Amino acid sequence: MSRRWIAALVGLGVCAANAAEDWDGRETLNATLWMQTAPEYRALAQQVYRLATERISAPPPGSAALEQSQAPAALARLPTAVILDLDETVLDNTVYQARLLRDRANYSTASWSSWVAAGEAEAIPGAREFVASARRLGHTVFYISNRDCTQPAPTPTDRCPAKTATMRNLVALGIDPAPDPAHMLLRGERPEWNASNKTSRRAFIAADYRVVALVGDDLGDFTDPQSFAGDRARLDARFGAGWFLLPNPIYGSWTNAFGTLEAKYAGLRTSQPLLGLPGGHSWNGGKAVRIATWNVEYLMTPATHRALSATCAENGGMVGGDDRTLPCAITKRSPRTDADYSSLRSYAARLAADIVALQEVDGPEAAELVFPGYDFCFSTRAHTQKNGFAIRRGLPFRCEPEYQPLSIGNAVRNGVVATFFPGTANEFRLMSVHLKSGCPAGPLTAPGRNCDLLSRQVAPLEAWIDAEANAGRRFGVLGDFNRRFSVEKGGAKDAEGRPLNVYAEIDDGTPAAAKLTNVTAAAKFTPCTTGSEYREFIDSILVGRDLARDLVRKSFVRVVYDDADAGERWLSDHCPVGISLRIR
Image (tube, rainbow, N blue to C red; front, side):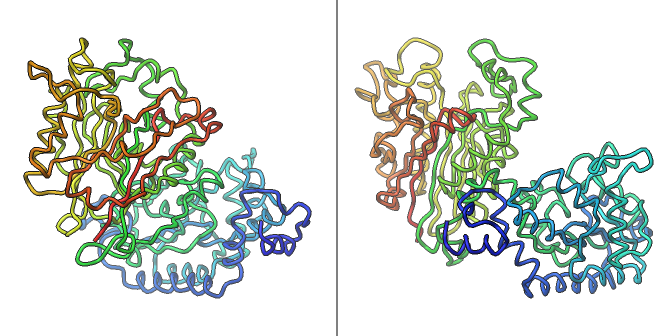
């Protein structure tokens, strides 16, 4: 801990002898001081409210609320309303945050409930004037807050003490001399309002009012944050028009991606930032893009895990491509916890890949739990073991049609294909694969269903590689090949023309541009954990001749797990590998 940090703690009344102790809340020091003292923060807040006041003075047709479903003619006949969040939008709670810092404490429900009950919050700069202007213009003012009606606990005479205290606070601040309790919608006030998601409460207002403005400090004040991630290009234009966002560096939904202090540090981006997009600009300062592959072992949401655990597949977990039955070994496990996802996010941050080929992931909703801030291309099959890509947001890409021949009539998994930097000199195409398991070594002619299916995947895999090479495209194939290429022996085929080995067959060098470079073969194998039984790569990165020319020497990365972490958390039986490619 630096001397400057220790001095800052002493300035807050903290004993220097204890300054080396660690607690998560310390990281809010600068953010809290900035909101309390910086003229820049005050100017930003006032600027947002001035702009919002201008927009609601003559609001355009339509609605600011995505939940507004009425036809245009019906919408025009509705009375108008503005919707504001409360905390860090109208009410300034930085005194509560500062007390946590002073007391070396983290947020807790008990301390927050006491703060709410006291009604001592201050006003955010510009909020009082905006509310007054909205009412003067004839708009009804609503507040939607995640202050909870159950905290403080209800009494026989007060079903929602948090609302009573909050209204008293608004009166004391001169924001609302006679607040209407029907215009303040708190969490838990109705059974359908128990979630922190505010969608149902916005819909409740939108049933009777045309919403002309939304004001808040978090994406959740405007839309579901996960929905925003999937529709950002369209929704970005709403900010400054009907959506007005205030800064809040202390807390919010953006912190959900980081469960621990360590994960926050791991989430710091230390490489060059995005400088531009296609049209002559570059990615990562014109240096490189990192590609990687990671099988995340039945990654799904906890809700999905619970929903699918009533039945399971007994026959070794074998299920069809359109079957969402889980293997019994997975249903017997408890769903992943927040701590498990947090650990996985920390390893993803350590990998720091721009493009990740994923396997055993149940689509974008599950992938978002480990890769917040990414876009996705995924297989459309129903099975929870989907393969696909996570792509760092802002990197240009195009999801291509799935490569169905690899599925052998839907018996196994399709290839998922995406093109990156399309239409530029940097364009390349990758296919994420998850080949049939159960035949990791030995000849493909060995008896058994697994070796037979894997053997039948070799020809379509080679056909895709050859087609990409013949089309003159730079390409690569990466993923879980379920095959230890390093121990394959002999030629590509036996005397009867049957495939014997996967790599020898797909790397036949015909055409010449189809000649492959096995990135992982040149790297030293490191087990995912000290006690892992696996000693050869089955997760591989293969690139064609033309793309291999852009490999960055000595950029191979293998992210392994901390043994204690792997013992306590459900991580994966695979860990990721990656490599960087030069960008022109």
